[in-house]
Length: 91
Image (tube, rainbow, N blue to C red):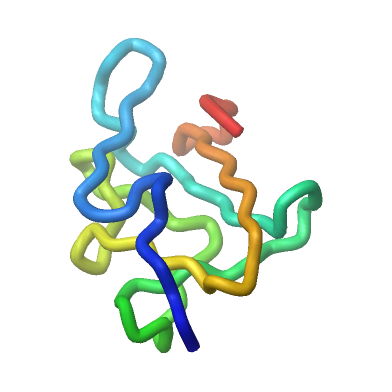
């Protein structure tokens, strides 16, 4: 499968809450664009290991598994960023 690096949290991106603190335990949901249908993202450029959906951010507000998020080139994505308590930060 061909994949590309996500422009939303691709490598080493750090996410913050609305007060500027690292978004520890935050959640990134990935969906097919325009829907609420979950869509897979991947941990490596090989596109062979899927992230959990949602991706749970570490204590520093970064994605696990090396901090990489890769996307299927044949798909269009929508991302939803929430706090660990499900408060919406961004779509």
